[in-house]
Image (cartoon, rainbow, N blue to C red; front, top):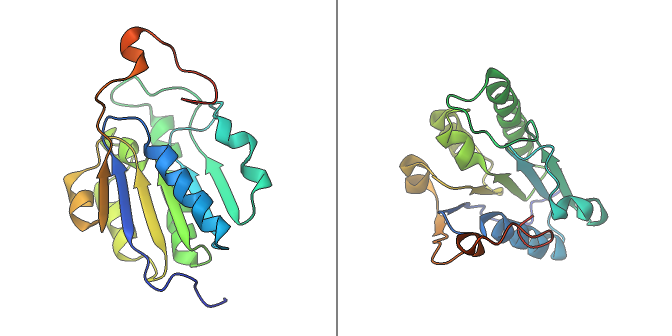
Amino acid sequence: MSRPKIERGLVQVYTGNGKGKTSAAFGLALRAIGRGLKVYIIQFIKGGFDYGELYVIDRLPNLTLKAFGQGKFITEFPPSSKDKEIAKETLQLAKEVVQSGEYDIVILDEINVALSLHLIKTEEVIELIKNKPKHVELVLTGRYAPKEIIEIADLVTEMKEIKHPFQKGIPPRKGIEY
């Protein structure tokens, strides 16, 4: 393995009910690959959806993205056993990617939502954080970040919704919201 490019990787959390958590993580990824860092993005509960970022990812150097989920919003509680199974497999991949030390930044997009839906256990994510290699920057996104995650993170940003086009009945726009 070559020498890590980040001397000290931190843990970042982007949470809150406002828009921009995934966008902030993708902005960080873009900045990082511009500097020659390797980034791996793992999306919880977003597999099968038609997000604009999926159309360009494979053209960017040093960036890998894997999206998991059933291609539908999880509206039932408790979530289905299939949703739980997929989330556990996704977390296992996250552990393998982080522990490999091959990537400078690992983004776990919507992991906080997976936690809030009890698809995976907070204790397992805390273990992942505590056992990550020193040089790996770890980013966790999604609404409802658990207080235990917030407490051990190095940086926490809360996106606060003040006003949103949805409130005026404006539907999601291709290229802007997805």
